[in-house]
Amino acid sequence: MDRPFKTSIVFAHEKGTNVLYKVLSAFAFRDISLTKIESRPNHNRPIRVVDDVNVGTAKYFEYMFYVDFEASMAETRAQNALSEVREFTSFLRVLGSYPMDMTPWDSPSSSISHTSSS
Image 1 (cartoon, rainbow, N blue to C red):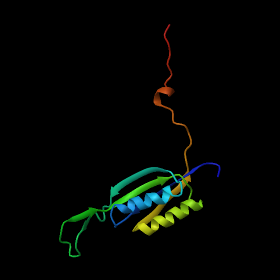
Image 2 (image 1 turned 90 degrees about the vertical axis):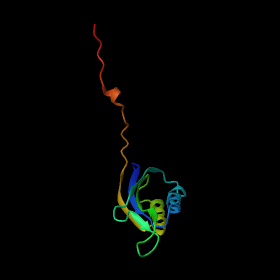
Image 3 (image 1 turned 60 degrees about the horizontal axis):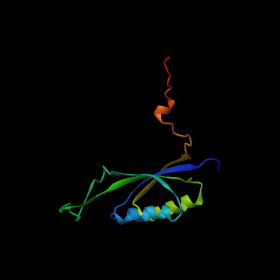
Image 4 (image 1 turned 90 degrees about the horizontal axis):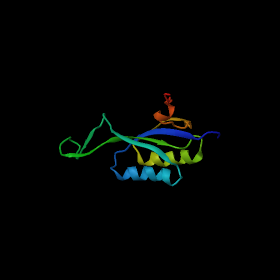
């Protein structure tokens, strides 16, 4: 590939916080760098309850996790990582895979021209 790629995914899980460790390990094991991890409450299922009759105390909040990683979906290592992630999650969707923007970021002060008065 001429340019490095980035892929964005979203996933949810219902099995507690140790699942996040397993998901992140799937990427670390394959030397795939993560550039973003963001969690947001799942508005469709914000609170899980202890029993089946909806009586009891709140057990935990269910979250959606948004992750960007540095690999293309055309790469075997990315496909294998997501295959492993699928084993631990209740929901997984690839949002997109696209070339990374390699444009260097210039600070706003560098684009301001300074003039000297005589």
